[in-house]
Amino acid sequence: MLLQFNLPIPIPIPCFPTSSLIDMGSFQLSRALLGSRRNWVVRSQASLTRFCSSGVIKGVSDTSSPSVHESPSASASEHAVANASEAILKSRTWNEHQLTADQLQFRSLASDFAENELMPFAAQWDEQKHFPVEVLRKAAGLGFGGLYCGHDVGGSGLSRADGAVIFEALAYADVSTTAYLTIHNMCASLIERYGTEDQRQDFLRELTSMDLLASYCLTEPNSGSDAASLQTTARRQAGSTDYILNGEKAFISGGGAADVYLVMARTGEAGPKGISCFYVDKDSKGLSFGRQEDKLGWRSQPTSSVILDDVRVPERCLIGKEGEGFTIAMSALDGGRINIATCSVGGAQFCVDAAQGYVSTRKQVNVWQSHH
Ligand SMILES: Cc1cc2nc3c(=O)[nH]c(=O)nc-3n(C[C@H](O)[C@H](O)[C@H](O)COP(=O)(O)OP(=O)(O)OC[C@H]3O[C@@H](n4cnc5c(N)ncnc54)[C@H](O)[C@@H]3O)c2cc1C
Image (cartoon, rainbow, N blue to C red; front, top):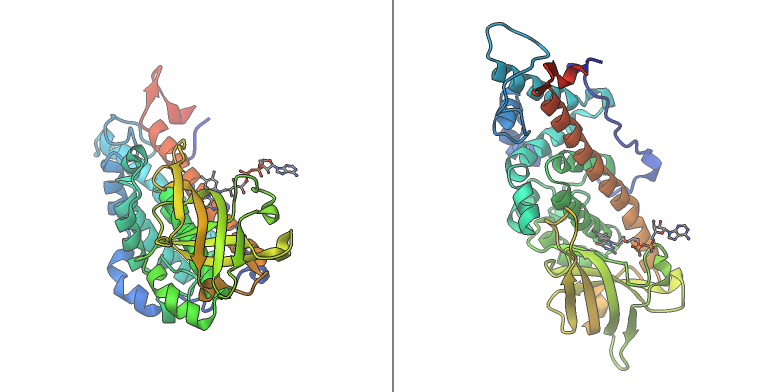
């Protein structure tokens, strides 16, 4: 069967019923942000061809041949590059998903960033377990560090759907790094939504710029799916308004590298109503980290346990009220789960495009593999 490379690939984009979105404020990325980044936004067939020529799509630049669209005047390798780049371009035809004009621009911005700042390095970062903090800060410079936060604290004021478009485009180049970025955004949005005005002003600017990186700490060695059974405690010290936190969190993305830990800990009764949420500084005395988890892929972000041994946290670092921590943690995950799924869609799309590029350049037993 002849594969129809010249047809746009229908990509299921998550559909977000507006009522279920977490409304973090304005649904428009600031025009100022877009205007100042206008030079990032221009995409072209030429840039995609460069993308393929660089050998990112293995087999495209270094093999002779096939062509879905034959032209006697062009060389075989030119055909290969043009065909593969066209497949990629068409697979990025998003209009059929009825994205808004703004979302198409966000996608363009994110795709350019992914192509230039993530794609060329992703494999090396994974191999070397390198957490690309500087590149994450560059992403924050485009507004990707505080997607759902208000403009007054350096955020972009976007919706969940806008964020999904951006994360999918970034994950096309690097799932692991993008997944961490989604978690950082989840933490910032949690403070945006549940923090007091003082907490927003005190904490968010450094998070939206990614001068400080954040981690989300819910899971424990004995509390995974059943998160409401968590055992980390936060007790008021007699004669003080401070809380003293004790316990261990497991599988924390950014563990050891992040500067801020949003920790769910028990301040009251057993079950979900006894849990509260705390902003914990990395430099807090008594905070330490377990060994880095070894993973298959997904190594450009560190993952470790976070150990709290009599960590003192001032009252002003309680996010929300006592007992609201479980609700806060779950509502953050409502968006976080969509974002992680979106990363998977982006990574899967890259695999489809790479496979298409490859079979359109490979001939076995005198038959182009794209013709099977
Ligand atoms: C790379 C990585 C990064 C992570 N980052 C973070 C992070 O940043 N912050 C954080 O808090 N956590 C993080 N996690 C933890 C993750 O959220 C947990 O792994 C998840 O909550 C599941 O918990 P668990 O691993 O203990 O699995 P378990 O709860 O033991 O579940 C194991 C399996 O059993 C199934 N299961 C559980 N209970 C039932 C039931 N009653 N009936 C039927 N099936 C059931 C589950 O669906 C699952 O498939 C990370 C994990 C990984 C692997």
